[in-house]
Image 1 (cartoon, rainbow, N blue to C red):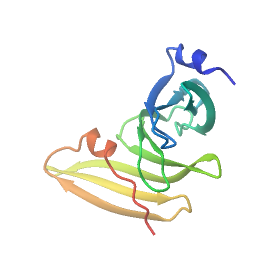
Image 2 (cartoon, one colour):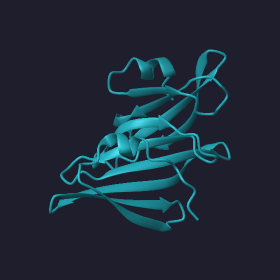
Image 3 (cartoon, rainbow, N blue to C red):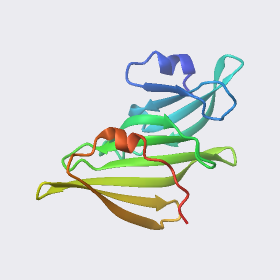
Length: 158
């Protein structure tokens, strides 16, 4: 495992600081695109210690991570937002939680944009880790912006 300091001093990595384990201190979440992984380092007495690893869901470059956010749900700790790297503009938000001392996928939400007859549509599908899917369409006379997806909340869907 590469050290935290080595990962921080590499231009290719994106680093986000927020409280992953809800202990009141900011931890470090690193998107390492060259290894297709997310690494979580917990802040222990002022030092960052490696704790969790997850795939970054870029599917060999088909999607790219555009943001990682802290989440406050009962069974989620962070989310990754990725965007399709080709035409079409599909975005995905992956909600991850700590369970049995592992970082695991809890839920995926897909966002598909379309425009037809001066109306914008956003098809939103919530996919639980069991594979159960629930979709709905939101319409607007204005385009949807990325802030909508950033702030899209985790909901524990039955």
